[in-house]
Length: 238
Image (tube, rainbow, N blue to C red; front, side, top):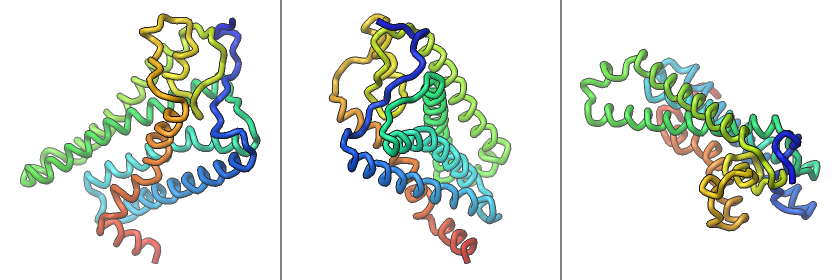
């Protein structure tokens, strides 16, 4: 039996124990990570450079790109390093930092997507009032509220999670630190711990789908299919 005061590191779930497949996982995640960096970085640079794109919709897109860059940078590089060096270890502080930033950036992204939905609603349903309802000050306030709410939620959940005593080892069933996996190690009552309703492999696949894929494909979904953005990118490149 152990408790949280004696735990100095956690063991993350490896994708595979085969060395060749570990290297394949490294190169696959590296490709996805570079695609996310390129796509989101290009969006940020293009919108900041082109004065015609300084509108509420593209202001929110810059914020979304920043959140995606931060989000994928919290989980993927550590997983890549562990596969490359055949390791599973993450420090206690590193695990707490992952939990905080994942919850912070993912929560802020949810609130930001809500703001983007409101922006499209006003543009389509109330076009004559668009400039009044979504002026520069309103957009800044909405974006700041999304970041601040995500930060406060992450601070609260991280503090509550790591204040619990842990007595079920230090092995996590995920390739990055997340709250449900840490709760499974706690000594608390079983209402609190998440139910075992799916297999470990299914959890791993689902976590990749929500944590790795969106930051890489969001630039294509929200921007690169937009003719204004494509024209601005072409001007910037040429």
